[in-house]
Image (tube, rainbow, N blue to C red):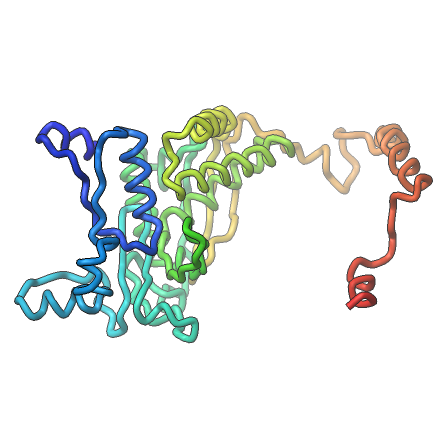
Length: 319
């Protein structure tokens, strides 16, 4: 990685341009610390001397203009905001977007279009997943990079993946952002349908818990921490049976389910849950299960542990 290359060239200090109020400074600092505790980090935006001359981005832009230094802004919108982007998505924040009275629609989408500007017709897409990873789009085998690029293009033109949020930063502050991630949203919706077919209720709950933990860890700059690595390994184990082909229809920012086929490890059997007569689960056999589960329910009622009054009604009485 970057740190190893810097060390090869005799560097002993990593300098970054992350603001002293954001998350990236925490990530830079922590990753350097865990990879090489002896390596130093210098953050100009936390240096009192630099902050005296450049208290904000506006002063920095003025400096660039004054000295004829050219710069390119990713989004050429009339309103002012900052954009950070990679292949998975991008975030728009700062300046005009800091006011909660500014609509998110001031953003000029880079990875797609607003839903209102998307085509009026439904566009169908077929995604083939193997062990939780998309390996083909519309019948064409692709590498992970090609899959993401293709999904970004298809979902983007259909107005998917635009959202706004007040995120909780690591330092405890809140930051407003308008985000674009069309391909990731499309892939996420697609693979979710496969997981719904192959994971039992407890595995689904565990998967969600682990996914949330991994997300929080990566957000906090803790990818290399033991709990993160352990959770990732568990996720891959749960993803083993997640193979299937999903067809979705996209229109104006929305993707709806069309079909799920070729799922060898599905635990969904129509006969077991059908409302019609079938050879599946015998409804009569549920009687024994309910009699056993009623033992605890009746015991709790007899012990006075159950309150059947509306929680909301009780709150209104005490308000």
